Amino acid sequence: MTAAMTIDDYLRGDAWATGSGPRYARLRDRMIAAMEDGILRPGAPLPPERELATLTGLSRVTVRRAIHALAEAGLVEQKQGSGSFVKGRPRVQQSLQRLTSFTEDMAQRGLSTRSVWLERGLFLPTPEETEALNLGPEAQVARIARLRLSDDEPMAIERASLPMDLLPNPTVVARSLYDVLDADGNRPVRAIQKISAINLGREDADRLGVPEHAAGLRIERVSYLASGRVVEFTRSLYRGDAYDFVAELQLAKGPDRT
Image 1 (spheres, rainbow, N blue to C red):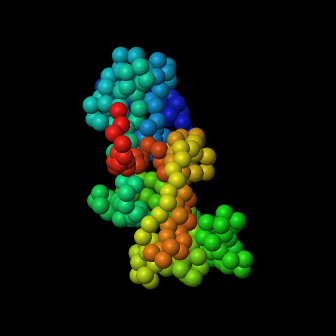
Image 2: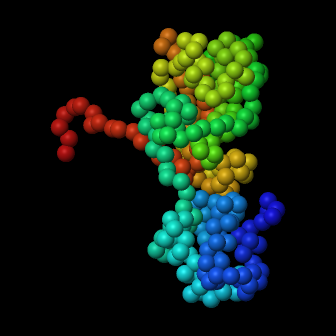
Image 3: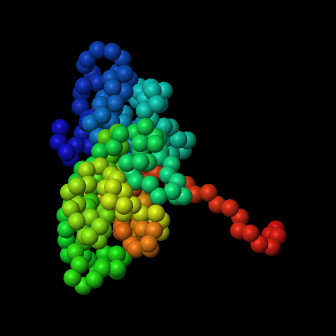
């Protein structure tokens, strides 16, 4: 199997005329294998029944039965008028009221975390980093970038920049950046976040395991120490199919409103 293989390549052939067991079950098992091999990813639509029947040479009744079996197994979701879609993992609800790390968020849900490092070291700051962190003309910036995974499922790409004196050795960050900052008395106490909806580019989509142009969330966060000093400038990309950000709102006090 090659990286360029599509679901059409995966299903096309004469395998349905041979083998043991009902043909619908063979098609069901082949589609399950496509999910396990990443050919059919969470959220991806299944080809229409007519297309599946043409690819496999099976009847539409057999194809429909295979899809129904996948739905009964909880592997696909059938939406009236829209087709059938591969089910993804449950969406994560994240509160916007508390300043926590990715590791802490996932631990609260009983999920394991892992990181794939994309960048880690000391660099000359970009103009954007210089402005966000209030750096001087000769300053360096500590920069870490990593792909964050929860239970081995890609969830987010985090790119954090900090003043060098607050993180002089970025390689000490193993799991949680906030644990390192907390140990040095530099854990942020408040932050300002900006959330934007985007369509993911090819490179970021590939890293997150979703199709190019899939919906994503871009979050820019500037975090502060109790003294008011900026400690962290973070730009993160989250999978749009994996996260819901939740905030509790209260009606502002004032004159009666109707």
